[in-house]
Length: 253
Ligand SMILES: [Zn+2]
Image 1: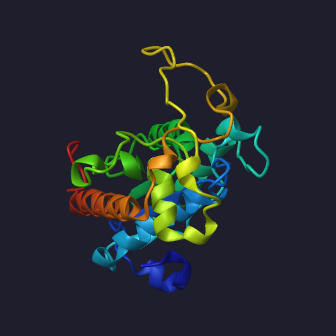
Image 2: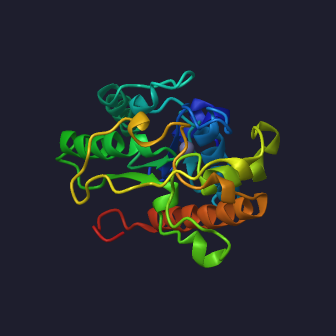
């Protein structure tokens, strides 16, 4: 069910156990070859592919395209909500649905920079409603739902998501090739590197890449993009089936 298409009385008739799914993405630089709306376009497609099998059982909110992309602000076109503002934005969105009685609130994320504020948001929201024992507040990222797409498609080189990388470029070649600029086969590889692990290093994108991408977009193909969309959509369906099946109390889900 699309929230945007329903009247308030129809929303009022819904079971409050209906999971509310909030897709959250970004508008930010994606190198010389991909459009700034890449994360929003890709997440929109993953969600679109997942929805038919969940049709009447989840309430899908419109995709929130403004993400937290401060680390990309050196690249023109990037739009960003600062992390604290973004954290509060997500909390506010969740509070709206909690105010209307919904108990299962699920953020589905499509941008790495949203991850830390997103996790903190659901954590803080839970603390505010600490007397409740029936709330399920989840923050998820579509490529971290269990997928090992390189096991399904052996032609994939990368083992993890980068930025405007083999994975994202392949999906854009599959979804909207007219928006991909130039011959991706000629793009230089940018190694993801090791950011002083196991420490966590504060960084801006310019520390890691000059062109703006991180990873191996020169390996991208449309066929790989189809494999990635299939795996990610299946993962999202399986994850949301778990949310639907939750017994309302358990920790395990
Ligand atoms: Zn991206």
